[in-house]
Image (cartoon, rainbow, N blue to C red):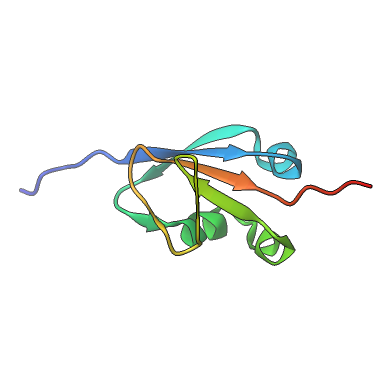
Amino acid sequence: MGANQSSESITVLCFGPLAEILGRTSQISINSAITCKQIIADLGIEEWLSNGLKIAINGEMCDLDSLLSPGDELALLPPVSGG
């Protein structure tokens, strides 16, 4: 019988209009390392990628192919507009 590993989670922080859509903070369970792009796809917000979405892991700006591990914090930073 194999060892049953319970899934761990990452914290997703959303800002601006994404906070209104997804909520300010959420926990997502993951079983292994996953890319930021995969999380964005799972959240159904891929359209934000072409609108200038920036991302950060644990406070450090990163790219879409960066890996997230259990316990990480992913910040989704949509572009700021104003006039």
